[in-house]
Structure formats: C-alpha cells, structure tokens
View 1 (cartoon, rainbow, N blue to C red):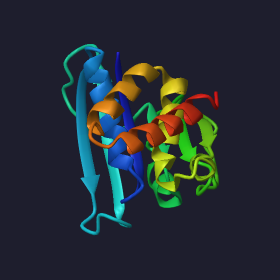
View 2 (cartoon, rainbow, N blue to C red; view 1 turned 90 degrees about the horizontal axis):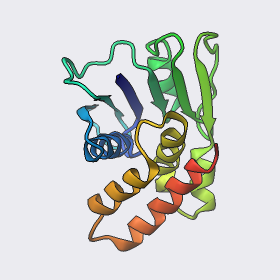
View 3 (cartoon, rainbow, N blue to C red; view 1 turned 90 degrees about the vertical axis):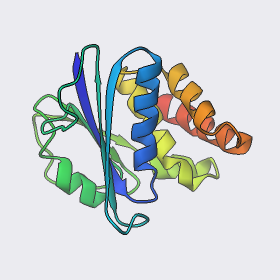
Length: 176
C-alpha cells in the first residue's frame, strides 16, 4: 500500500499543519511516511502545499505526480492540482471557498464546507481541522483517535487550541 496525498491552499490556511498531522499520525500507527512541504516566499497569503506519502513499505520518492487524494482549500489550488489526481482518486475541496468547475468524470469530488463549519464553531482558523477530520473519515488512512492524539502532542502547551481543534476535527469527521 502506497498512498500519496497533496494538501494545497493559501499560506495561513493551515495546509502544512494538515499534512504534518497526517504524517505524524501515520508514523504513530507504525507506517512509513514522507512529508514534503512547499510554499511561496510570501508565506501568509501566498501559495502553500505539501505532499504526504504513507506506506507499509519503504517509500522511494516523496514526489506525488499522480496522487490518490488532493485536498484543495482554495480555488487556485483546485485549478492547479485537479488534473494531477489519478483516475479513480478523490478530490476534497473546501466548499466554502471553492467552486469545482469542469469536474473530471473519473474522480470523486468531496465538498466539505470547512469554512462554514469552522465559523459555526467560532473558530474560523480551524477550517483546516474540519477538512482533516472529513479526510480521515473518508480515507481511513489513519484513525481519528490517532489524529486527535497527534494534535494534543503538537499543541501540548495550548489547551484552548487543542479543545477548539478537536471540536473541528470531530465536526469534519461526523460529516460522513
């Protein structure tokens, strides 16, 4: 099993955090992982993406030329990466900001109103965790419990952020 995912969006949307959380969770579950971040010089507001490869064997290359999954948090990311998803793959998109124009017929589209849900939780910055929760549920690459455990570890000195982000993860997970 080798599964590659690209997470993409604007800097500041927590795109790299989503990828890092997935990578750390997969490692905790004993899987082999690569994490390859990429971001523009602008950082906040510029483009950001990362590739996460998860496997039960050694991973030869962290590059994902035809990933099984793409998570697009904004319209430019959808436009850039929608054609890279392999046939039969899944394109997750933030339905609060993205309108999937000209969808391909050979991939599944999964719209997650991540921004709207995060707003309802009074935490607009947690849209990435809503998306990660939905992604974890739909793909089963890692368990939700492990993702929550990683989140607690990463944010160990920030109890309020752990609580808010766990609520966002659960809200995304419970969508499906």
